[in-house]
Length: 158
Image (cartoon, rainbow, N blue to C red; front, side):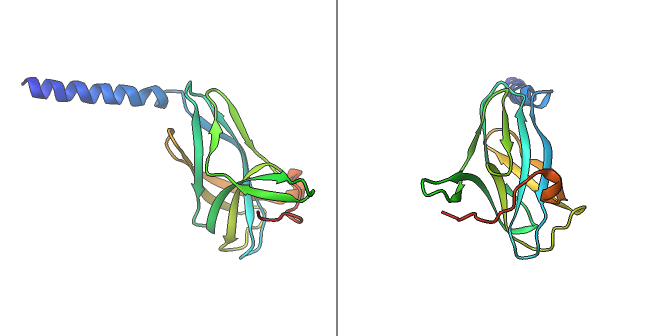
């Protein structure tokens, strides 16, 4: 009887700990969209993350069946004036903070898209976090001119 009670008490404590994040305190994604691209080319996903929890977290990557590879990059202008995309192993997401993925900055690179991404289409992508559970999104494909984004011309991989 004591073992059963101890087992049940342990289960309740574990579930209570999980509920602290599940009940209203979570990571939300806003304003997400993907860049139009032709099959075999690269695209990018942009979004705004908001961490409503009281705990720092990290986005540790993303995945999608729509591309050969998915990488998190940050675009930066080097000392030579050339824009480079720097791969990021993880990106900090502070407690009760925001993190913006936007043209010319952080973005999720879709390398070698498997089909044409035309405006009006959508793709599936999953965001992965160190603490928070994965977030699955259906991301609309947009024309960069409509979204105020620059083209990817002039980018050089490091």
